Length: 97
Image (cartoon, rainbow, N blue to C red; front, side, top):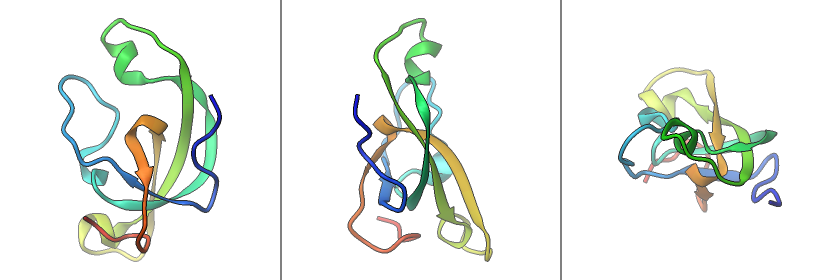
């Protein structure tokens, strides 16, 4: 699978609440961040937690402004996210839907 996002690109973490296990932290759902780097290609952890498998997909380190996530803070929070958790963003980094 080709990488869907490149370093420097703005992305939005999907806002849904999936059933069962997910590695998508609730505090980043719906938030806009910036791809820092591609961290490798791995089977979606949600599938593996249910005993399944599937194709590998890109995993990204995505940086979010702490103030955008928690309402305060002048630092950044970097989270490792699978491509299935992300969508393109069309607004400023740190904004929320």
